[in-house]
Length: 284
Image 1: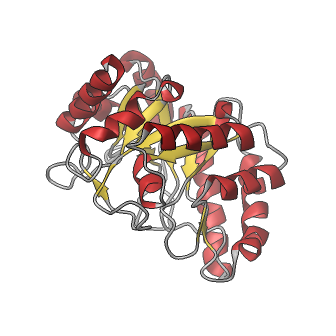
Image 2: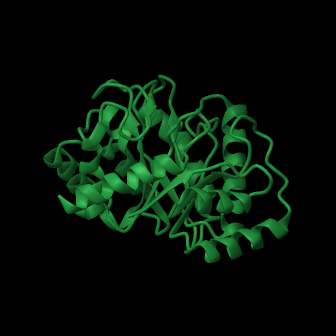
Image 3: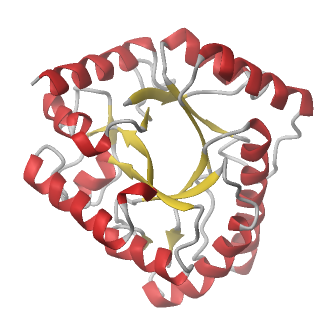
């Protein structure tokens, strides 16, 4: 398991690799633009080559780009929908330029209009973006926490999208430990976690599980509240090791999205704690 972190790219997208090296990360996730604005960053193309070179120098085993949280591909509002599609297309283009392994996306929320109605918006949006994917850079759907009509709260919903996109060869899944827990899957229970992975395997295929988000949870099991906690400081605690140590999840990039001690994102201590927890789980 290649444990890493979501890190800032302030100063040029290539600087995120420097930060990954500084915190001892084996994988990396970045935003390709400000997560708080629709306007895309005008990257200097030279930074793309620098990113690739630095990744090779540092030896990162996985690089993910996360789509904007503003995006909603099920939005009934045409302006939001069009901005969402344009933003995700831009993220995919930048991800391809830096040689990222995947773009991770929250599908969005139907905002009460219903799952099937939401899919009428989601599917054509994802078809557009998948045209920009490559064998090097996939599109990954992330499971949601399940609040507010979000799509992707269950493996069944993700599998439905996967099927209706004709099992696109570059469409995969990213599983988030906190989101699974708050949507009712107890990732601290080995039997429950294995049942979840059996479902992924039978409906989508474990070969399509390409990345993990590793977060403790500050919200209760089944609460549908997306509240990340620092490693070992939430309700999962040491039992987050059940998720980290599962044999079928090894060999994947596993990115921390925790707030860190100063709410500036994961630091070296967060990465160290996750790696040590993983080592204890494997040894146990």
